[in-house]
Structure formats: C-alpha cells, structure tokens
Length: 260
DNA sequence: AATCTTGGCAACCGCCAAGAT
DNA sequence: AATCTTGGCGGTTGCCAAGAT
Image (cartoon, rainbow, N blue to C red; front, top):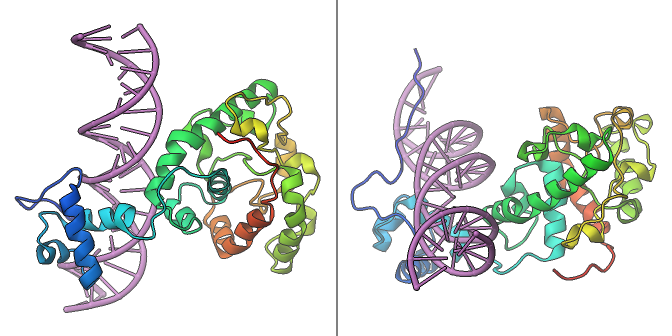
C-alpha cells in the first residue's frame, strides 16, 4: 500500500526562531541575498547566519524585503483590478498578484479580506433587498459568495466595458471559446460598480442585476458574467488571461471617482 | 483609567506539484 | 517507478494598535 508522504513543520529544529522579524535579521537577509542570491532557501539561513527556517526567510523576502515591493495603500485602480481579476480567477492570489506589479499575493489577500470583500458584501446585501429574483439574491450571503464557483457579478459598468467587450468577445468567438448565440450584449447583464461603491454611503437602488433566467440565457461561456467552477472554464479563462486583463485595462476609462 | 472588542496585517501551517535522485 | 526535496500557494492564526465601553 502506498503511503502518503508527510513532512513535519519546517521549523521543527530546535533553536529556530519564529515570529516577527527584527531589523537586524532583515538586514542580514537583505545583505546575504544581495551578495549571493537566494539559491537554496533551505540552506540559506545557515549560510547567512540566521536562526530562521528557509521557508520563513523566503516568505520574509518575497513578501516584504524584495526591492521591487510597492508599499502603501492600494490605489482605486489597483482595487478595481483586484476585484476584476478575483471575478475571473477566484482566490488565486498569486495569479492576481502577477498582474499587479510590486504587490504580493499576501498583501492582496489581506486587502481583499479586510476591505474589498466587505464592500462587495454590502453591495450584495443591499442588492438582495432590492432584487429578490436576481443572481445575487440567489447567492448565500457569506464569504462563499465570492468563490469562483459561486461568485456574482462584480464587473465594471456597461459604459466602462463596452469599448473593449466586443473585441474581446470577437476574439473569443474566433478561438471557438464563445459562440455568438450565447452572448447577449445588452448592458443589463453588466451590473456596475459606480461611484457609490467607492464611497462610504452606498446607493444601490440602481444596481443592475441579471435574473436567473437571463443568466441561463447567457450560458456558461462568458467569464465576465458567469464564473463557472469547472476546470474547463477555469482553463479557458487562464488561457486568455492576458486577453481578459487587457479588457479591463481598456475598460479603465472610469469616471473620476472621489478619493477615499 | 482600565478593560474589552475589533480591524489590519505579518507570519505561520499544511498541502500540493514539479523536479531531482 | 518510487521516493525525496524544494518552492509555491492559499487558508489561517496571532499579535498589536486603535476604538469603544
């Protein structure tokens, strides 16, 4: 019988330090990597003279010490990008981070859980009140709502998307991913994040939500509207990741929104 | 002023996939 | 082919500061 390999925690060794990094440790790690590169993370702490496990060193470097890390608050554009990409990819933080230069998956995950999710849930709850038959109302009002398998419409407004949408869908149709009859281009399928999303007060009476019937009509091939949980769908999105991302870049002519 | 609660974030844990042996 | 090692990822935890009571 084949046994599953199990590895113990990487920091089992005695004397290995855990918890927050001190400035001195940071300095040692930076200095070592600048001189030698990181090479083998497991061997690094010993060679650098750090009482840390390799994994801890790698995490500290990739999430905090790397020179190309961008610190500070996320811009609205970055937040919008996260929302859009999360809509496409679900909780695949590293894939999302790859589209946000200088931001780490950990940071994006944190900002999602602490800021963005709350805003969207607030919208979702308000939408539930006003649109009982909508897709959103059909979703459970907890964090699962935003799983790729069950996420609802969080995309830019029709105005924001319209310029890029037709070329996007054209291309997908060329590739055979999307069929013309599966698409309804009418703007009602694109509930919007408008200025109310970015402010503390939400005015959501006019959030556009597709009905279940509409959703079925659209089918399962349009990632912007109906994220599907299947691996097939997932890979289609992945294959066209740049394409979808470019859509959102093109759709970036958002209205001037107030600062937080 | 002291205590409790909440929110934000850095860091850890466990699992998995890929590459090496 | 089987086993081992490593790096990467996502979920979760725990600490700390700020705000509320």
